[in-house]
Length: 86
Image (cartoon, rainbow, N blue to C red; front, top):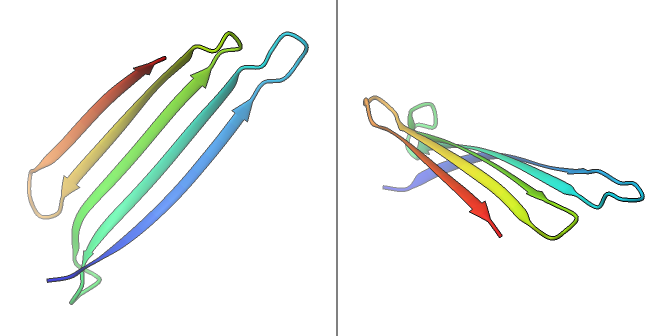
């Protein structure tokens, strides 16, 4: 059985500028809806992904991401969290 995936993505870049600042922050949001191929009105799963990263002017990167997934017509849901330091 095939599937249809509908995805909405909204990347955002925020940058602070000035004489002493070269920091930057990026934020990404993705919402994905997985549908039945035979009936697009019937959902299978929904997934929301959110990621944030900040780069300091000294080169250190701190970030985090979250992924929430929910299967339609069930009590099954997952939440994954990640952090990044570099």
